[in-house]
Length: 118
Image 1 (cartoon, rainbow, N blue to C red):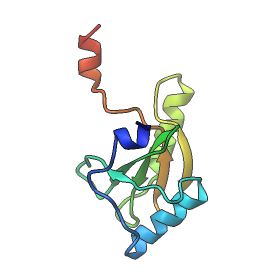
Image 2: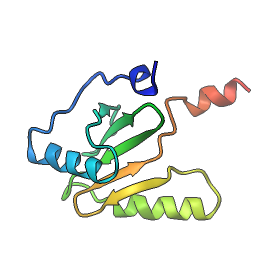
Image 3: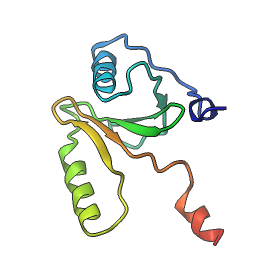
Image 4: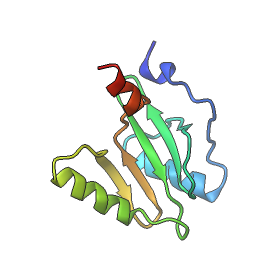
């Protein structure tokens, strides 16, 4: 079983509207063309998160649609945290104008459960 099969998407996105087409263009431009994003749990914002996986790699697509969202503060905080030696998702690709970030996938493990097991 491949990594992609192991985390098969419960919700598949089809590039039907302008936002989905922009997302597909962004993914294609950064080596993820043809992938099927799997929607992840969201937060209390307009942002959406989607897991991407193939046989050898995985990443998370952050969809932060302007004008409701702006990825620049996130990019700044990640740079500060990583600069101080803290763990923060690596940003693999970005499109600030359209509100897309391709970031490192830390997986599904909850920190509390991870610490409790030690």
